[in-house]
Amino acid sequence: MAKANRQRGGEGELKDGVVNQGFEIDLQDVNMAYQEEPASSEKTSGKRFGLQKIRTGNPLNATENYINAHSKTFKHIGLGILGAGFVAFFIAACVMNFERSIGLVVLTCLAVASKAYDLLKKYKGDSFQRCLAPTVSLFQKNLRWIKWVFIASAVVLLIVWLALDTSQRPEQLISFAGICVFVLLSYIFSANRPAVSWRPVLWGLGMQFCIGLFVIRSEPGLIAFQWLGDQVQIFLNYTKAGSSFVFGELISDIFAFQALPIVVFFSSVVSVLYYLGLMQWLIVKISWVMQLTLGTTATETLSVAGNIFIGQTEAPLLIRPYLKDMTESEIHAVMTGGFATIAGSVMGAFISFGVSAADFLLPPKSPKVRRGHCDRNVLEAASNGASASIGLVANIVVNLISFLAILEFINAILRWLGGMVGYPYVSFQVRSEIISTYALCGFANISSMGMVMGGLASICPAKKQVIAALVVRALFAGTCASFINACVAGVLFVPPLDCLSIFRTSVFNGTEGNIQTCCSDLYASTVNNGNITFIGSWTAVTNATQYFTQCCGIYEAQICK
Image (cartoon, rainbow, N blue to C red):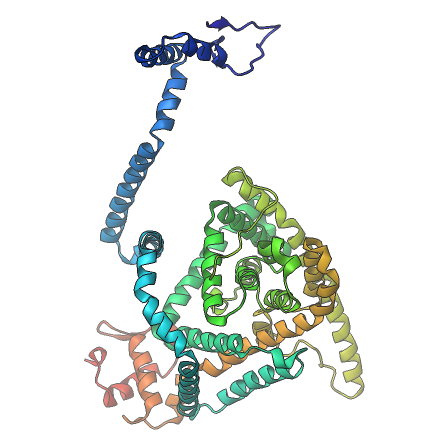
């Protein structure tokens, strides 16, 4: 039954056979062998005999068949070995240096919690739903008065907090007034005021306020986000390995060679995360929380959540199949989300300038994302991600050249006009450092308006007229959102004490709260090893020893002994 593989001038031409060292076993012959065996009781032995021929003719096929037949077993064995190895590594790392292993502990806890949630949802989800059904039903029946009680309680708590917190810093009320003004202006200029839903507005401001309170006012939140920002900055600094190899010493002086490679690197990393499915999972989880609280639709929520990690032109690709069926309100929300946020790759470019990453880190079934091209492996995903960033990098370069040149031209005109009246220093760059902090909260600018129009119109040509009609309103909405972010930060931000000025102008007594705070800071910067020395900002203070002695006279501390 086995037939020799006839080769014509080199390699033979195969059809349905399997090659083994120039010998082919035709599957048709094997089927004929099965048919020629006796029926009933001898049928099984005939199949075994036929399979034995295949095993004898090609042992690689037999091995492959065995592995395929027991693939689950081998998978479980492999996962068990990897799991045991990770547990051993985790224990060893924590025992040797726990402080150095905090990042590993945090990531492990997040992974375990996520997997536990998925397993509970898969195997016990129905049980939990049945158990919670009476509570949910009771809550929905009384939702109307519960909602008003919650709103009234939140308003009362906000008023009390503002009264107590702003009593020492009245300038914070200016930022609170800014929030009210921007929300009021947005409502006044709304295209359909009766249709405005206040749920996403109030929930959005409330969540932003709570997150800001946790990050800015609480010590654990400040430490956690500062640590997270440092890790992001360390990760993006790995770009220097590639850019220094390509550009050499030019990366230390030239913006294009220093910041733009970070965009390429981050784009490549995001593409790999998409290939592994991690980015989709994270975006879906964030959009689920937003949809649950804000009450927005699945499509617009998914796109806005994607803006956290990818650009304003790439995020709508997540909902590409559904754009043609979306309402004008949903399309407006998608564009506004793009204007009000910055992509992770652009944040990486800002970090290269020394901007702290911590300053920015401040559903029903979700639609499945359809992709026109599927990467075959991680390397191809990384390569395609890097290639996809070429357009973004080019856009950044040309816009910087254009707008910086225009800005310098306008500044020259202002200096010329100001010089005529004896004030030649007028320009648009006064307090630019402060204003840029607010500007970096969003991507609302005229060049981005063109990018959004071109990107969305190419994805969904049928909505081109709608996009063109809404893009200007979305630009202003994104700008308002960025300034509201700044106002929330202004309400919550507490400027650090100028302890040197306080020590110079205040009388040392135990009842002054600022004196006590500054003395505690001075104690923390003091080293007493027989001689009193100071570290940190107190090193350059001439009278630090005198202030230390005065503090020890009114507050007891171990460092004073």
